[in-house]
Length: 168
Image (cartoon, rainbow, N blue to C red; front, side, top):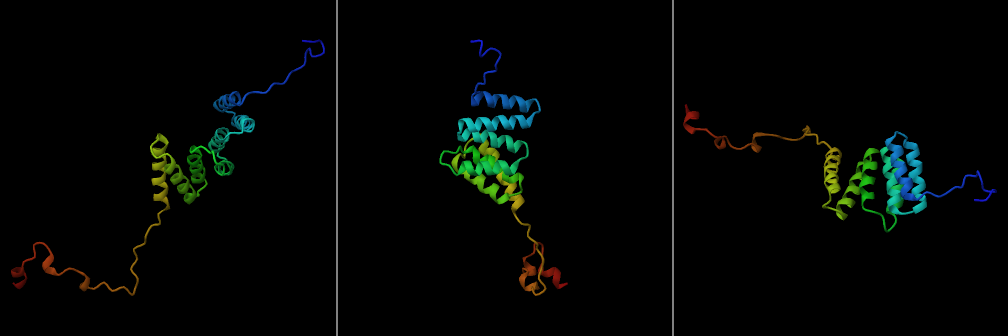
């Protein structure tokens, strides 16, 4: 090294994989914002759907559901988006209370990958969301409805009914 460069810090570029590993280490240590920033830099550097998916997962874990959803919608608009993006989008949409969008995302995921372990989670989530979404029906009689004995079965249809017993 020349005397001219002596004592100077030489910047170097971390690989996206190294940044991701470092981000997960920051998350484990309780520094979520540093983890998000490292994942954002890694995603920008490699610019792959998988990189953006890692960032969206971390944003969702932090409760930044709207940011995660926006990122996932942008990613899904591309042709080479991983199918896990549909599941991640469903989780974000469900957390935002957008049940219909979450159900739609789950159907997209299950259409693409119906037999994986994540598909089982998707089915459970779909069941709970559809149950939550189903409106409760009120069985209130309208005043103009006529419920006369004409709609009831004849008394002879009841079990144990004896014609002789009624004659006495």
